Amino acid sequence: MSITRRNVLLGASAVAALAPIAARAETSEVAIGVIYPFSGASAQIGVDAQKAFETAAEIINNKYDFDLPLARTEGLPGLGGAKVKLVFADHQADPQKGRAEAERLITQDKVCAIVGTYQSAVAVTVSQICERYQIPFISADNSSPSLHRRGLKFYFRAAPHDEMFSAAMFDFFDAMKKKGTKIETLALFHEDTIFGTDSSNAQLKLAADRGYKVVADIKYRANSPSLTAEVQQIKAANADVLMPSSYTTDAILLVKTMAELGYKPKNIVAQDAGFAEKATYDAVGDKLEGVISRGSFSLDLAQKRPMVGLINEMYRAKSGKDFNDYSSRQFMGLIVMADAINRAKSTDGDKIREALVATDMPGEQTIMPWRRVKFDEMGQNNFADPVLLQYSAKTFVTIFPEQAAVSEAIWPMNS
Image (cartoon, rainbow, N blue to C red; front, side, top):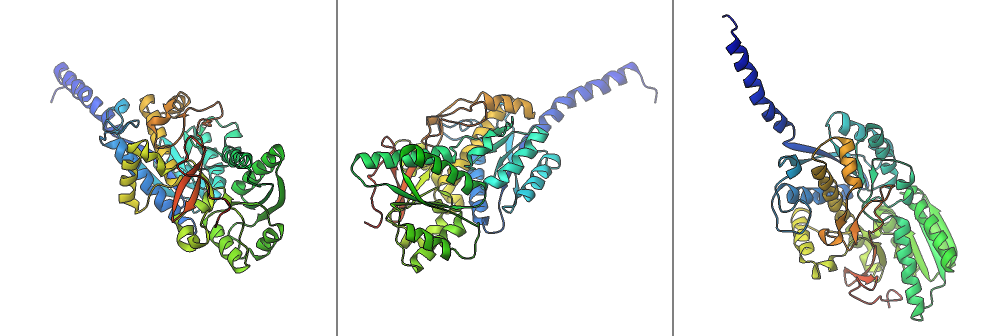
């Protein structure tokens, strides 16, 4: 068959007609990597995180009458309604496994962004890989202050870090002292990864600045089989406040060991982590009446912002539990990232980064008690106001700061 000019034109127009369809097909889904521990001692964190991310994706991909970015549209309007597709990876709480999984998500699964990671030590390696490939990374729930101070351009954190959390604790101590409460001595108890050491450093500095005496500063090996010697030291110090920075298995062991050795702290003000986890309260909650933990989320907020309660119901239907300090930050991590991708109108890393830099989300359009989400030049949101929560009658209530509090603090605990 001879090729006429008409055949060539028909062929060209057919290709032209197919081109937009091909382009649309490429952006019908936007792949975002989610990297968490799904096996090992922290596996439950990963399971709960997956449900939080799936809840956020459901809201983004469908229509809901929530005052939340992307809730009232289907998918990402900036990319023609493309749906968010989550690609999960298991870092097993191992920084090197995290590094390898981040690389796999980027090179094989072609994700345009990554959200993670629970353990701050894993966030160090994952964020380095993202930086190398120029893929935006949102540190959803990592609290180590040093993470955003490494000069990385693709690192962002919407939630508070431990210097912000610790400052809230010391603001609370100062407020209690003004009311006549005796708080003079502190005992720090922290695990030996970047989370615990950064937390202890922040607390030591604040104690010195605010005039509190640290009578014990005990560093222990994470996932230690025994904490007997360490608890004996804490008991001997007999501080006004015990301030632990421990993940779940360590927190449970700490509380059990204190009970075995007959040590009842006057007060515990914890750096979240294991002291925010349902597993800890299922195991030793009877010994934790009155414990205080810092947080960045409070379900009490639903009283002022009904949307928070409705979204929590969606999460509970998937996970069987309420949002906590971690799952709420994970949920917001995906919302913030998807909002930036939508405004970038692109899956290009540099363009998403530019959109993240330009983020300015009012606090009322989140599920958190934050003033807003706006990143500084290091990728940190300094408007993420922490809260202090007290465990009482099997639930957490907000006791600080005053504008967020729904209850007065019980002090001392067990009183």
